[in-house]
Image 1: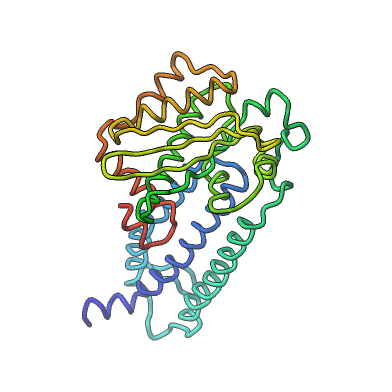
Image 2: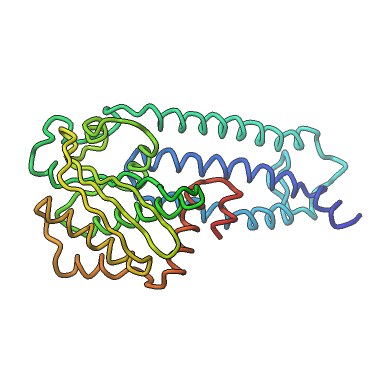
Length: 302
């Protein structure tokens, strides 16, 4: 019997299929539950990484051991002549049930993402959006890509995420995470509605136009309660100055909300992980593909 025949005999193929189905189900659960509970995005990333790392381990265990009606046994100790046909059906049941749950959860997640009501968010700003705590709270909505090329979507999304990270360094400011803010991408809703759903008093939105080695960013700070613009700023710079632009926007927001951006907060937001624009661009592209959450884009992200 050849190598591939041995793989089939030891049910390695079946384990691979079952693991893929269950693993996809686990990732869908994480991508739905984590935003709903306002947990850190790193939890979703950790689930994906651990699921992918567990795949080769599952195949190794499938090669060495086998599931029988009597329990788990070493592959070499299994009596093939005494195997019951029900053993083979176990893998079919696992795959079918896992696939059904995965598909169901996928559509539930998409439905709830598009039909979220204010009751889904525990937000003190729902009843008193004009309080001091509400005024010092903000959500960065996904910046619109106005470059004329859909391929530049990664840049506008990545810049939006980095603005969230920069503003999160301001200790006095409550900043809504990426998972919640990005639910409103390409959705036409009134600022007041968004503010109530996210529990914030202000919104930061805008556009990004990337052409060659230059970038133009228009940022608008909006009072969520009445939709009035607090300020609008335009930044027309070279790409190499993108980190400075992020710092300027964060400082302008802090000033408008009377929050303090000093000392360690200022140094942290002003010093990104890399100042190499090409490396930064590659990072944004990989991060964009990662958050699309499908197997093909996971490969592109790597």
